[in-house]
Length: 166
Image (cartoon, rainbow, N blue to C red; front, side, top):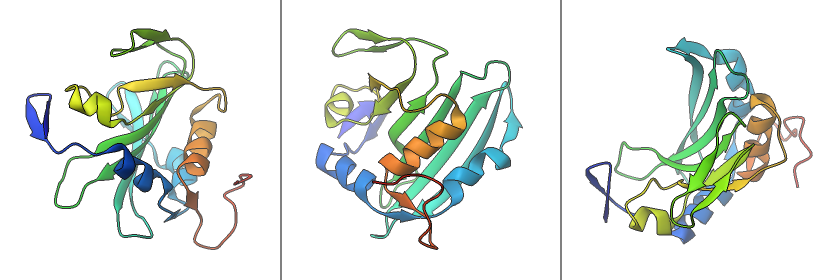
């Protein structure tokens, strides 16, 4: 257990994070999110709930600024059993801002992917407070494609979401 944002939360271990990311998720909802986006203040957003092959619950979120096309996030979150909070496992961000990894003191500019870690949670920080530079996407659509590939999404009909899945 640790404190995040004034609340006591159960820490998700690195092994659990890895297992959740690797769990197969059969859905085409990821690539459909941009067409379902609705205005929500200064940005547009769409969300979808997904169940993995092991019964884990996930939420996929696509968010983009209405003013800056490089201010976007493609997010995979997990909803731990018996809880309602979403733990962000991966967050593919645009190049609209710099990010500083607080524990390491390293600064990133440009596209970057946030990765949930046990270490950041134990330090009382957001689970996905750590980020690494990214080069595999240039906009929200391609960020969602990377999320789908990296986080083991596959369409229920066996096709490949138009992606070269590895």
